[in-house]
Length: 298
Image (cartoon, rainbow, N blue to C red):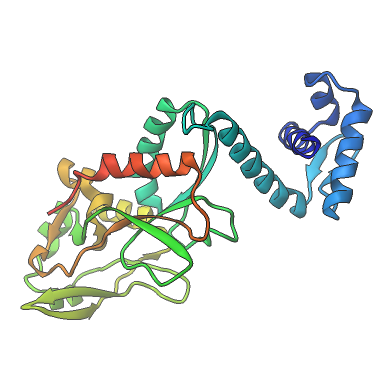
């Protein structure tokens, strides 16, 4: 258990930024904390912290090691508290999602989950790019659409689709398109991803799938920015109906071409394969599935 105690001391030092503060809080001598840190650095073979007379900061190796330490200690605490699969959930959960999905849907659900599980701490990273769960040490991602083959395990949370939409004021000025090819006459705002801007929108008619290339005066790598521009009447966007359900209900956005929608854009909970998710992560996935199961959009 000495190694686990050393890891706990390291996490405390990293979070407080002070060796002396940790020593006071844990009723230890400063030399004991310093020696523990030195021995830990020797054991891992890397410098974990940089110390000056005024402050303490983590090295890049120390930052990565801190994430692993938190995970290891959380798993240990959870295992000890739940030998018979009982006891409160404890520990960190690192989650990532796209910007609109994270802000509008996931963040409120995470709040509710944490209200019911006060021993859980959550780190939420929002990005419209694809984050590597393994390299960046994330426990869980919420992702929409077709999932590429990968070393990840996915669980379907809900079905959905993408819709062409704009503000009512935009449609009044420019008219509603009757067919996807009419989008050539509209200001279509595109989500930009590295090497793959989403400038071809997929539709379906009479069982045939076809793409329409769109363009406009605005491109952004943030779906939330595109949505706000659309609400302001700047142009047309292609958005997940889950991202815009509140805007549709409030009349801020209106959809068109719904009869040409192509296929489902499903929402998945994705986690690294090869190891069973911790009890707290599994509980969060179950919670999300339960809360989202009745939100199928038509």
